[in-house]
Length: 338
Image 1 (spheres, rainbow, N blue to C red):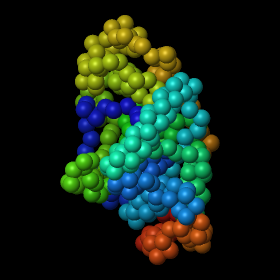
Image 2 (image 1 turned 180 degrees about the vertical axis):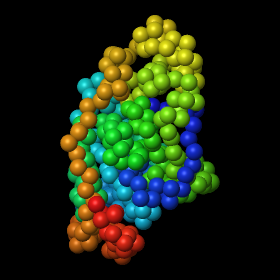
Image 3 (image 1 turned 90 degrees about the vertical axis):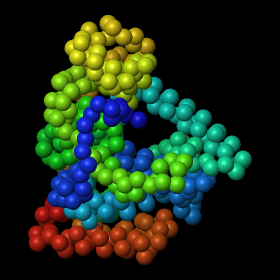
Image 4 (image 1 turned 60 degrees about the vertical axis):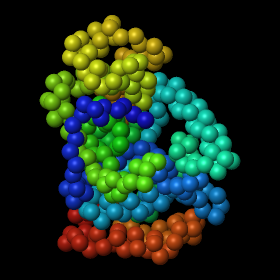
């Protein structure tokens, strides 16, 4: 998902403590997809479920990993997608087809007794019920969330550019194309992570990416960075065949503008490149948002996570202790919850 500019975009590792006291706008859909993809049985690929058969992997990640951010002094604000732009419909349909194909491969692997997680992960789907449950949990934890005008990453970028938050957070680079001055990757997957198909673990740290630094190092402007994204492929188009980030950068430096660049490549997409380009420059955003941190509600968290979704009361209470201990560290409680 999203544009992949990793081979040309510089970033540097940071520690979570670097973000202490900072407000971070988190792309909620991107974040939740990570949880329902990763938090699964390593052999069968089945996600976590409660006794009613409802998937709870996203709630597990949201509760435990977000509490780690709060313990580090970070102020998370979750941003949920609004209505996608019309030209994204084709992408959504293609993704659903790929998920359906992966589901069949998952069933075949299970029937053969083979490791099935890689196919299971490709079937991950965020439903309306999962999104609603996530909002209920965030509200109980006292963590604010906002519904974007359209794309969550565009909203995060808008808030960061306005300096209402200090950073955007997502695994994808789209927030940079949308104009976010600062992007943090790996925020919610910090720690040891297993390399697929190997009995090896690596240490994953948050990565900081700065828009002005990218523009300076690559020798392009933001508009040209968007063109590179279009050539490579975004959430709204598949990109030009056999053109990667380095080739795209070379083309943009040579031809400068979108119109001139398109004359030298073969655009096969149904989506209008001008429309996508303009959407990155001027996306639909929600300008009437409020950011308010509240006290966590212990009773609501236990009622929702333990009684309704069968989570361990002991583990949930430890998370609640983290939430309240963070309050205790502040001489002025509203310095964090405010």
